[in-house]
Length: 283
Image (cartoon, rainbow, N blue to C red; front, side):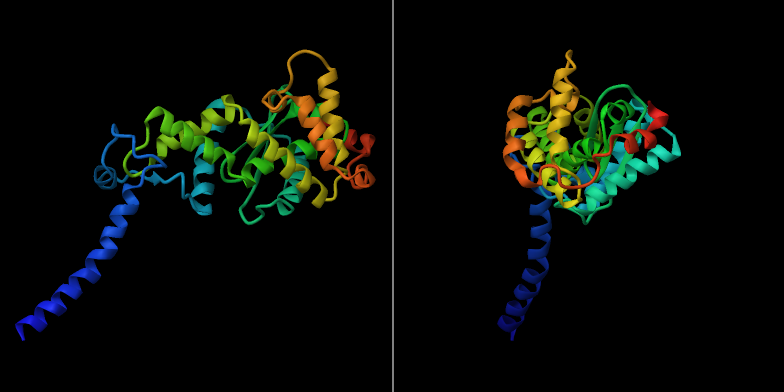
């Protein structure tokens, strides 16, 4: 009887212990490397109520939440939003049309207009895209503007910012045994959004996915190439979204090869005057 009891007792504790060991193992996974030893233990972080992000395994819900926190800091401290209601409505309409036709349509996307003369746009994690008034004014038509917004949407679809945050966390040794705490993750996200270019591979992927999204959304894909060529001819420093590697001529060539010639100008958004009428407030 005693042996039978011991057998059942051991089985009972094994059933209880294995799930606990699994949780401890999951919490012990670093953002992707075992080399970080500086940070606080996962147990200390949990006791202090610190929210932890495992950047190698972030859920959609966690990513959107992180994006909201990054956005709060960006809007509160780094950028000034453009408040014209009609311009914001127009940009959001274009953005949502692209998001629905992206390779990742199942998260919410937020498109915001930044008050600034820079010909620029950027994206953060969780579906947040920022479009400068300078970019809106520089585009000749809606399809050209949509091509840049599609490119930024593609960065989100491919989770490029999360990959860069992970690399930065490893390089700087700011990950704990549990992962990356919320405040550190937000800080890295803000830095990436404003000051760190995407990699050569990320840009190529975003160009390809962006063109696919642009076409699926019903815009004329050749507008992307025409806008890049136009900006190269203006002289001076290239806009931030074009200044990263691969070099712009190489990107243009790759895009031209990706666009079917018989469909290059098939689609919406090529009416220059109609576009000017809609964006008159930023001109």
